[in-house]
Length: 126
Length: 178
Image (cartoon, each protein chain N blue to C red):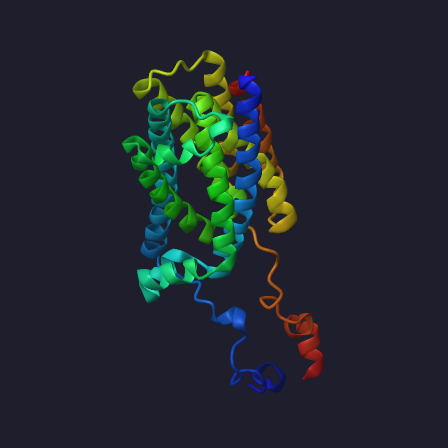
């Protein structure tokens, strides 16, 4: 029963953080390079620009869901299983979602990275 | 030299693409890269340390049962959980910074090195058993990092404004206009 609980928590983390990551990347792309913005207009401009973005706030909502799922998962299993498993699976789903929703150029190099990470996750999980 | 056609646009405002400040001195560029590496390193270290602290805290809090999910909130009273959250907030700020100048599909694998740091910290501080198989898995993830680290951090669709109209740059066309 416990592995089922653990993997349900991991699945929740993956779904919620993929949605969060995509929205976050979208928000940050709209805002632009934070380092340059800070140099030109100061840290308060950066904070207000980021916190004022509706896409960012929605992303935070999803990431909060992912965080609490992670907390629950950690109480059921080891960090060296839950942490890498959730984060690496998220990486694979993110590669697909980034291509579809952000129109990112996921080239061969990045797909190879996805395959290696997936293989790594399989080894970690068993 | 009379170049009425090519000279016609000189007094016109430059197209938007030409106004973007692209040239940097070598020093500026190096500083920029150093800053970016520092941001990526900060993502790696703070996410790994934060997760390990959370794990330590949750072990003290004990298992959360499905019948009592509200007890997940009581975990916020644990010092290690709070410290973990602080570290993860710093991680989050660095992550936001990285996403503002790089693709999501670059940032995620480039910072995958945090799994190795996490496994090391869990092994040393939490005395978790990291098996040979798990180490192999972690090594594969690191290899995945190698694949993206050498590539461009941001991929953009080809800018339309940067390309001059073909007839303007075609010497035969210019010759014909004279």
